[in-house]
Amino acid sequence: MPAAIRKAVIPVAGLGTRFLPATKAMPKEMLTIVDRPLIQYVVDEGRDAGLEHFVMVTGRNKGVLEDHFDIAYELEATLTERGRTEAIEQLTRDRAAAGTMSFTRQQEPLGLGHAVWCARDLIGDEPFVVMLPDMIPRGEPGCLAEMMALYDETGGNVISVEACDPAETGSYGIVGLGDPIGDGFQMTTMVEKPAPQDAPSNQYINGRYILQPEIFGILAEGRRGAGNEIQITDAMLRLMETQPFYASPFSGRTYDCGSKQGFLAANVAFALEREDLSEAFAAEARALLDAAGR
Ligand code: G1P
Image (cartoon, rainbow, N blue to C red; front, side, top):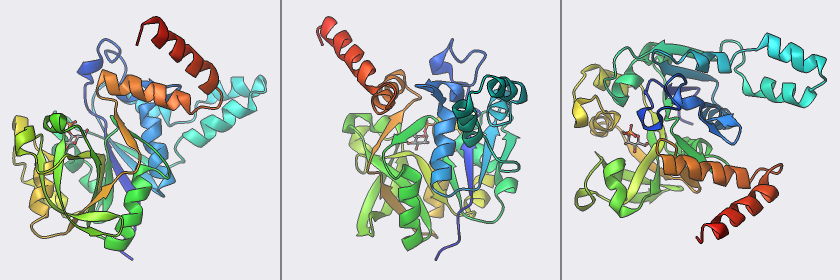
């Protein structure tokens, strides 16, 4: 068995300018899909896949994220007084157990690769996961759980991928696939945001990575790439020269909640699978579409 994976890095330093004014005084990771913040979906996915520790790479004005995973004594006391047992149970499940979450700051917006590098001391010399909180996968058993199953067979570095519209390759990291292995593929190459004619495939990186700790040595060099930022994709390409990389095709669908369309679609999709909402919400949505002639 390859070395166990225990920790995740979640980069949460981004300003969320695409969602202003909602994100003026509130971190974008607290935007909700139905009634749960994006960050909660990501942590739940990690826990479901067996992770034990989450390292959030934050920035200024992100303190609410730390509060969200803390005990809220006053709130819980009030709920107890009111006999709201179910709500308390939910809050207890959602929060972080003592010592299972760390926070460190990315002081300057130097890119995703730099954000991951900021977590190096908290990760140490072991393989780890990177989870991008804008990207919310939906499906069972969960995106990271599927990647872990492949990793148990292959070891090395495992990147989750999904098909995108070929016209949209310029928005994502795109990979080239080689021979199949288990439920995945050997990975031959990756390119950050290529124009459609330069893309090696339509398989895009959907924001979940299992990486070996040698990536930190490469990121430490601080080489700039696209947008003059330190790109994780460039560092992975260099690591690929000496280590194997595998693509894990996600069997579900990922919602890009960094875009308004993806965020709204995620709300509809998750609301439709909620027992307490599905029926009434579906009727409402259908009526709205009919009334709008769509
Ligand atoms: C980042 C990665 C890209 C990946 C994407 C998923 O880009 O660099 O490879 O496909 O996340 O959301 P960003 O969205 O930060 O521009």
